[in-house]
Structures are given as C-alpha cells and as structure tokens.
Length: 211
Image (tube, rainbow, N blue to C red; front, top):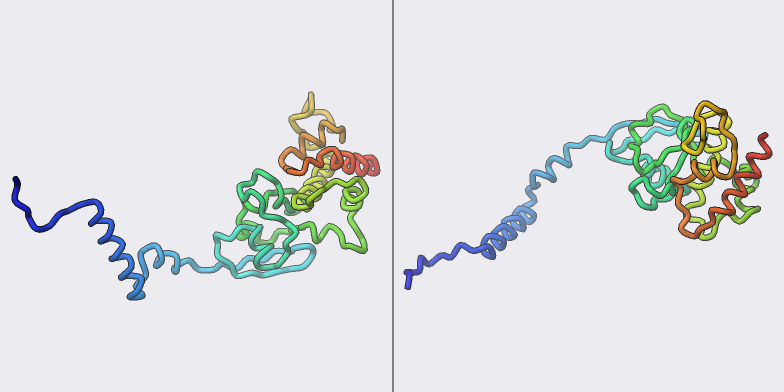
C-alpha cells in the first residue's frame, strides 16, 4: 500500500476551490477581468430620424437598432422574433430600404431616416397597405404583421424601381407584381399562422392600384 501524502488533488477539489475563489471575489467587491472590461465600454451618441421625428440617443455601441427602437424609443411595433434575421418580424425601413433591425447596430444608422410600422399610418389614417391587410384578413395572431406590412410596402417599391429578383427569367426585364414575384420577395417574412394567401391578395390589390 502506498503512503498517503495527506493531500489528494482531485477534479472535485479543484472545482470546489475555483468556486470558492470566485465567490470570494464577488463578496469582496473586486471586479473580475470580464466585468472590468465591460465597465470600460462607453456609450456612443447616435442621431437619426424615426417616423419623421429626430432623436439623439446615448447608447451602448452593441445595441441593435431593434432594441434601440423598442427599449429606448418605446416603439414596440417591430417585434423580436427569432433575433437571428430569419423571421422578418423586426423589419423596418431605413431610407426606404427594408432591413432586419435585429441584425443591425443602432450606431450604424447615424443620420438615417427610419420608418417603423407606427410611421406608416395611424388608426385614423391607415396606410393603404395596412387597410388592405385588414380588408383581406392578412393576419391572424398579428405578431409578424408589422414586419409583413413594412416588407410588403418595400417590395412594391422595389418592383416599381426595377430591382430584379430570383423569380425573373431575365433580370434585365422590368419586374412585374405577379403572385410569384411578390411571394419570392416576401419569402424572408415568416407567418407561423399561415396567412400567406391573404397577404398576397392584399399586396396584389395595392399593386393594381399603382399600375
């Protein structure tokens, strides 16, 4: 039998010691390296116009545009769905171009013009696309609807300006607001309730009004 050294180095002892050390640091009020680094991050000033109103925010540079809109300006129309840019619920318009606001940092939009669902229309004066969604029941739970409407408005503008898509046989041709064309362009906006057909009808009505 080997002689005992009086001290056993084991994985359990190491983990217990590490936990005790971490707890001691917390109790003593001394910041850990990660906490100290976080405290050094300074807020950055950003100016942009949202729905025609100018704003200046002092925010953490890591703040997404979606969080700036929802948490700082209290514009909660744009929704946080997947938070990975895959569902389109957070879609807003930046200088007329639709983006996934959850994937874009607020500080990247200094000086930009941002339009959210709140800026498209009001309950007393709806945007034509909003009215068409209501008329054709282009929503069910309504969670994705703000992003769907913002994207739909942008889609018809893209078609009008001749921006090509994968649905076209010839990208040089002027795109037309066909059912296939609009469905292709709206494919980044997910409706878990499955109201796609009604959304397409609503868009087709507005596209017809513009032709």
